[in-house]
Length: 435
Image (cartoon, rainbow, N blue to C red; front, side, top):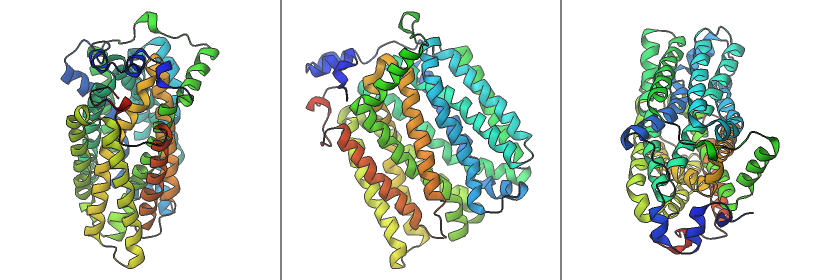
């Protein structure tokens, strides 16, 4: 595995112990628009992904009935198909963004997302819907890869961690309202109109990005789309120890998150009988995730990505074990489950952005490809892991507790691999250094 010092000027300076220089080089290329607007655009592009998943949750029974999905667990395919397109598509668009620039890929991806939403609106059977959802995921994948590459073009180190935390705060806030929006749509119209809402969101972001977001990859820094260059970039992404470790770690914590998404409607409605109150409870959990991301943004520059995310990983895993054990002792109840899952999702808010930033940090020269590889591994891997646990749903909360526990332990193992057996330390043991 390669060391970060071999891959970027930033890492070379850090390895020399020059923390002051590291702080000075965090801003690599100003985006050219106000910081608040820049974060808003990136955050809303990322939010399209969350919206495409979470707005579906209340509609799964209606979609299942309309499309004759007999096995209830198979309703999860509506979520999985999107995640397959989203995860797999990123691997293709990484080299494209490094060769053509960020802006064209971003706007083009949003156009695909919008077109696929039209196909979803007019889907009349499950196969049509699943194909359209895969295409929708592919479009969002292009936008995500380009958006994260823009962030890496402009920032690095703890500053990038702060930007990503603000972005994740919005990303996490979307689930607060998405299920309620989906439920509201169902009260006045059919489930097809949920996809019309996604279409409107995609068109708005496509126009906003096209008009305001500048190109951040200079022509002289673009990498030709030749097989040797692409394979070399892929190889660098998966053979850089820190990047690969946190990439896999992200996949495992996403596995827990996607397990929760896959089972949440069945747990809250079928087990605890919440009915139409499900979106409100789901929103309460999402609020804590958004709050954790906001808190992380405030703390990360002072405390560091590693300390915050490593502690969160331990909490995530320990509480997951409690969720797993409660049904065994006959202690499964709504309030205990709500408190535990809320705390688990809060800990996720301290891991997602930091893991992603640390995986991206050493790979600035291939930011587009790096973003695509990281996104593919984390999203597609997390989707598969979530689907596996989702299919184990047995009318109790135990499979979800198993997901949090097992995947949390695996994430901790990935941290230990990336950091060569160490946890909680700032990079190069310098409190002021970039991570």
